Structure formats: structure tokens, C-alpha cells
Image 1: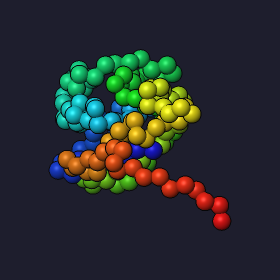
Image 2: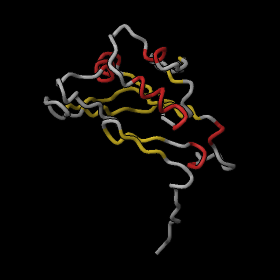
Image 3: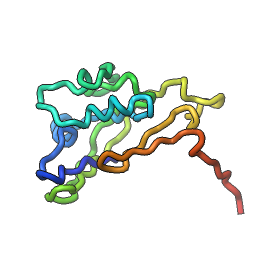
Length: 150
């Protein structure tokens, strides 16, 4: 599930929502600190005929099962079909829940540990907080809590 919100300043919808409504398929590309500046360029408002991949210097990578392209530079890419889109309001800032079914996951083996699990110390993920604010997960921010049986 992800939730593109309506723009607060003018209550318009973003291309992400419009494309999702039209194509009914999406690729969810994980963002790492290495590509966060490029990702930020894709969030700018462009005319509909402008290719955001080119603006951000991302590489188009053909998906295996769906029409939308993947971002080659992303270490994890989810090919998804959209099952449902739920509007959470009509006012500026209101979200839209896009509920997807993952059909195929692509994972760069360079972010895996010896047991073939995603190593959180290698991936260096970025999360969106809102407006111009983000956070990154780096080895200094990570901690582990082992599960204990009571």
C-alpha cells in the first residue's frame, strides 16, 4: 500500500495517482541514500509529456510482468498490479490508498547477507517524512532486538 496525497496548495492530483488509475499497474522502487537526489528530481511538477527518468538520469529497465518500467538504480523493485484505489477525501492533502499485489520482486544481490537476507547495514534506505524532510537508515542508526520466548 502507498498513498499519494492531493496537493495542499491547489488540491490537484499527482501523476502517480493518475497513472495508477489509468494503467492499474505500478513499480515500487526502493530509494536509497545513493539515489535520493535523483528521486527528489522526479517529485517536481513536469508537463505530462516529460520523462522523469530522463530528468533524474535514471535508467529505464523493462519489467518482466507489467507495463511500467523499473528504475535500474534501485536495489529493490516491486512489480505490482493494483487491486484497489481508495480515496480518503477530496480536499487538499487528502490521501489515496493504492492497494497493490506484488507479482515479482527484483533484489540486487549486493545488498544481501550470507544467508541471502536483505542486510539493513548494506541497503542504506531513505524514508519520506513530508515536505522537504527525509531520514536515512545507516549502520549507526540501526539496532537489533532479538525475539525472546516467554
